[in-house]
Length: 129
Image (cartoon, rainbow, N blue to C red; front, top):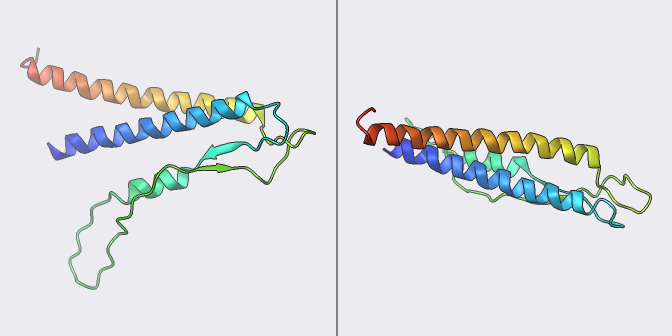
């Protein structure tokens, strides 16, 4: 049962990540013409660290180094290095639209997976019908 709960937790965290990323991208697109606006992005590295912190390892010797158990949050950073418009704005609309499409596919895949889990529960509770 623990594995089942972990799956739901991981899927929920993935949805949180995708939702946050969608909000950041939408905000960037909304500010495409705002002077000196610096595009923001959601850091994948933070999400990767968060998932790696959940890895359980078996230490068979006291000298084995344990995995770091610190969890991190999703981080939003600003793109300070590039300016795409004459007004100091760093939003690349084509890139943002591509990221939005990719993120939407990721979100939809996660929701399909969650629906599959709920359908499995429904099948089990219905006696296999």
